[in-house]
Amino acid sequence: MKKLLLSIGAGLLIIGAILVGMKFWFKPDLVYKRNAKKAAKDLASASKVIEDEETSKIYTFEEASKIYKVDQSLLLVNQEHTIDADFPSDIVEYKDTGVLMNSCITEHYSDLSAAVSEKIGDKLYVMSSYRSYEDQQRVYEEEGAEIAALPGTSEHQTGLALDVYVSEFAGAGFIESDAGMFVNEHCYDYGFIIRYPYGGESVTGFTYEPWHIRYVGLPHSKIIEESGCLFDNYADLFEIGKYYEYYGYEIARMPEDRIEIPKDAQDVLLSEDGLGYVFVTIKTAEK
Image (tube, rainbow, N blue to C red):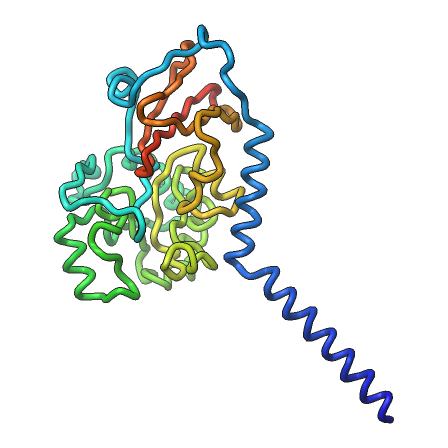
């Protein structure tokens, strides 16, 4: 009997160790890190270097911005990377609704909203979009640090973030609606990401917010979705100065004083990342 009890006890210890190991292995933030490493490898395998300088031209960001389209879609704003009170967000009014958002969002939010109406039969609303530095200060004082970001650390100040809802389903309850499920599963197809996904708290500083979407543009939203990485460490996937091919796009992260662009590139978009570099996104094929 004593041997049997010892065997059972040993077996329970082994099972317990396995369960603890599995819990650790599947710890959400560690899963994100593993996926991010895999994404980096996948991108590296699809990378290319422009070796012939005759096929490309080098600009400073100031020079390139006079030639190519520029937006703020890939600007990183968080507790470590802040923006000033007078940050020049590119804000416009959305379809005469009184809702203010970054100009690069409007068309894509319209497409996402139309998809919710068509596929779910519900109307998507915006509860909160652009907030000035002063507005964010007021929200922070009203809601507290557990919910609201400090002024200068909120993406709402850029107009790139939207808090969305449908009738009777807002905030944490948004995910309980069919529209909420659709947005969380398919916003990536429209250039948006769930900025604070489940399991990313240790990196983002915020718990899961299914209602908070952030525009980063295609194909970046799809890369983030497929890799499982967080936007906070997205830039780390790219080696500076190297182009990566991704399903009809070429992407590079370049120094602001040395942006190399292929001479034959037509559909070029530049976006500063807030870390001293510029993302170059070139659409090479119709998607």
